[in-house]
Length: 90
Image 1: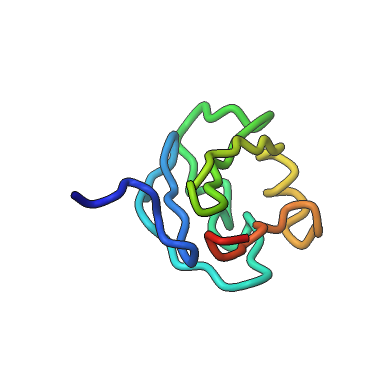
Image 2: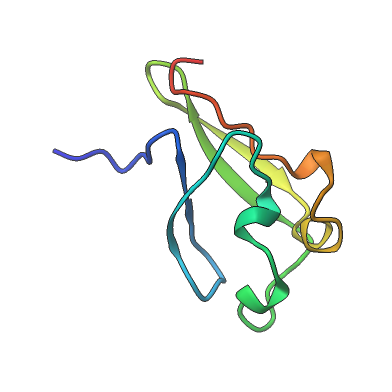
């Protein structure tokens, strides 16, 4: 049976976006590396919030991390929009 949990070097983009799916990421990646433009979002997308589901530890415990989607699009190089990419065993 395959796990629905992505590997540690990828993220799954889903929701009110045009191009859902798995995206490879590198260490130091930012949310803006995946969500690079408002054009990627469907009409009437709420920019006030978004969230990341992150799985950590050997048991792959799920964390929900909220973020301001509008801020990601306005300030793509902001250090607070970095994805914290770590191996599963972190």
